[in-house]
Amino acid sequence: MMKRTALGVLTAISLASGVALAATPDRTRAEQCFRSEDYQGFRAINDHAFNIRVNVNDYFRIELEGSCPTLTYPDATLITQVRGSDMICGPLDWDLRVRQSVPGGIATPCIVKSQRKLTPEEVAAIPPKQKP
Image (cartoon, rainbow, N blue to C red):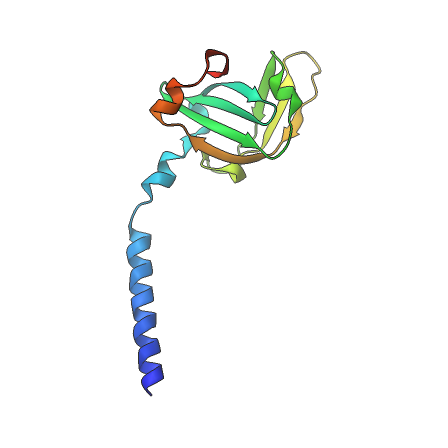
């Protein structure tokens, strides 16, 4: 009987903690999101990563799973497909392809590994060639 009561109390505490956590907004997660329509431009860092500008002052670093050589071409264009919500919060929200801006350019799929909003200090440290 003692075991059941202890288990019941632990379950109640766990549920109460879960409700409290669920009710707390995850600001960090929300700050990592942006609307696809607010995207303003990008610059490649290398064939595995690029920076994007969202609105006027927000910058994100996008890291790729593997090499995406087309990303480094001077006339590269990002092509994204939005399915469902237009909020981009992480890798699963990206359906990314990159192609050259020439007629008939072939779009190469690139898999996003991570997305991170840059701090003002990180933005200030971006070399001009990598700043969108």
